Amino acid sequence: MGKNSPFAREGVMQEYLDSLLRAPEDPADVTANTAKLLEDAARRISEESTVPLPPDEDGDNADVVQSFDAPEADTPDTTAPAQQQPALSQQDIAATPVASLLDEQFQALFFEVAGLTLAVPLITLGGIHQLEKVGPLFGKPSWFKGVMLHRDEKLNVVDTAQWVMPEKYDQSLADALHYRYLIMLGESEWGLASENLVNTVTLSKADVKWREAQGKRPWLAGMVKERMCALIDVYQLIAMLNNGLGSNDQTP
Image 1 (cartoon, one colour):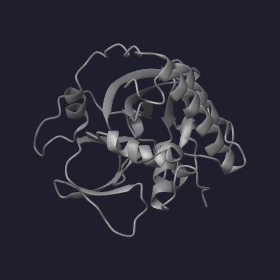
Image 2 (image 1 turned 180 degrees about the vertical axis):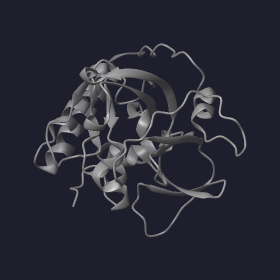
Image 3 (image 1 turned 180 degrees about the horizontal axis):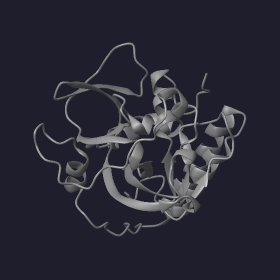
Image 4 (image 1 turned 90 degrees about the vertical axis):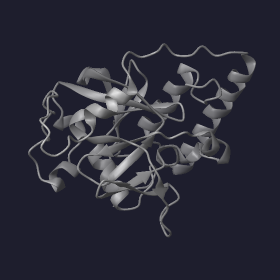
């Protein structure tokens, strides 16, 4: 995480994620609370000449990408079998909190966007691709970066920083972003742009502070307590993207 990131201090990261989980009733409160956190972060960063970098994670990002890329046709798959998707209809899955679809212990992929760490359960991960040329489309929300061609597929690329944190997204942040990967969501054509892949971790449900309120931010399943990162409910996120909704919008 860069020293100029608003989340360079762990306390700021935790306060920000807690504010998302509390889901205040008035959307204006979200912007006001986040703005205050960012101002506090900027002041603290300016008071320190350096901010320690986080310790390096084991493993290589390229290996992670390869392990989640679909195998070529007629090529034996020698990797460990993927975790099976829940045997539910898409409608049932979208209406079911992801916590109830997970085993007591589950694996999650951690990745970074603009200094914020996000995680997705592996059973909801559709794949990981190197981000290549993205063609913009007119008439789409500003967080829709465009379409990336991968083999014969057209993949929808989401500007993750703008979608997840619209209240802090400005031109300065946009210029600092360096997206390198595309995190595919389930079996959909939606993918989240990511700057860095961190690692995969086995979690238990007790490791997560689950979202309390229903209706607000259904994409946010909860917060991984020890790692201070947001755990994404992929199925809810897909439903929101299909409806052109932003992270703070009310679902139909």
